Amino acid sequence: MMKQHDKQFKEDAVKYYMDHKELGIRGCAQNLDIGTSTLSKWIKDSKSENGIQVRGSGNYSSDVEKENARLRRELRDTKDALDVLKKAISILGK
Image 1 (spheres, rainbow, N blue to C red):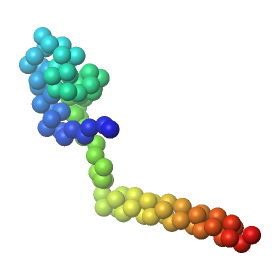
Image 2: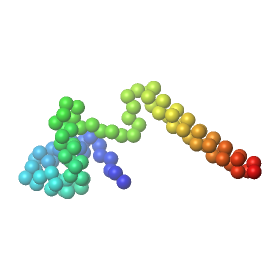
Image 3: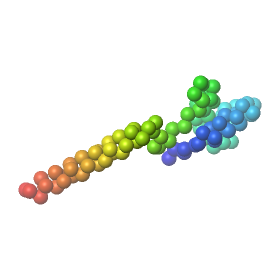
Image 4: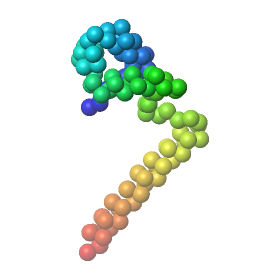
């Protein structure tokens, strides 16, 4: 399973790499117990305008988006339950 790292860890990892460039990305990544490509991405992101982005579950830009996501999940679950009931009725009706 993929680990979730907070923004502070990512920034510290980039700083660690900058302070220990002699180890290279691979060595720093091994010391931090993260993937080489992960550290590379964080380094690249830290140089961009937006900085390192942290994506987590439930990060919505507004309460309306959060409510819409909840309603979509509820609708999907209701449709699934209805499909199961339709199949059960067709099997029991025979």
